[in-house]
Image 1: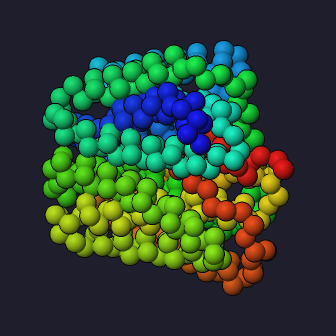
Image 2: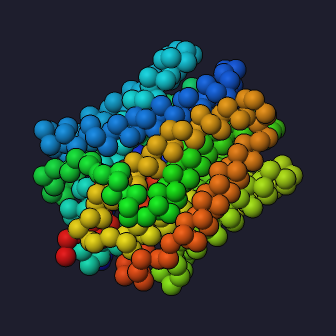
Length: 406
């Protein structure tokens, strides 16, 4: 275990630096857009095109890696993303920013793919779950720290953009000088929507609901905080605690689901998420960041629980295809979520952002209740829960031990 971590330590360090910078710019973009007077719909569009780019990267980047290798791809994508982030300071034009967000999504998706396929290649099967847990923790902690960096200087100050770009650029150094051998290629994303639906409709609903909520959370959460009167410090703490809640609860909930019908666990987590959304909506301003901890603890694990449930219903050799299908479903939700939430906020007021979240969760609960009544579980659990984060791309699916043929 220790030797495996040492072998990939430079990759993990590069991930930590990269995602700290990425977390900062992810929170900064909607706040800068709001400060320029752009509508909630415009901010939602920025979030949607980012996730469109993220989805496109799952298909485009593997071909690039096959041509030039992991190190050159990572170096090129960090250079691209650094340039994109710096370009945010050039023009205050929505169309220009939409293009930048699309390219950002492609770049970060590719960077995840490179790192995750590399970690997968360098990790033995018997310790892969532990390495995956460490990697997931690094992803979530780095994203949370990035949110807290909003407090470094005022959001109108271009130094925040420079800090984010510097961190992203510096991430290339440990990765490019690593002694870890490069894997030959990344499998191109391929999946069958019908196979995913046949495998588990509950998992599809969970992946879609997770995408709708996490997409709107990252894209519009800071705007919600700003419009209800929170200062930047409060917003950064609110976003960081939301991510931290998911990091804290994901593994215990997953292990608990190993002993129960995972459909019931997903249902109750969604129900608790709806309650937490109402809590965020009703509590006083000072308590919202802490209510967000509860919200993140309920919402962030939904995707991993759905992935684990789908794996209960398939043969091991089908996991990669089904897992990729769920990832695509999640990405589609992440594209649609910010637009729907932005329309609700624009038409009915910012305060209804978490009512929107509660409504999505309750629709998910109702759908799962109907499916549970219609169909009994196909079989008892035969797979153990493995961590997964919706921040990552197809490579995360490949890192899961279940994607290995037995």
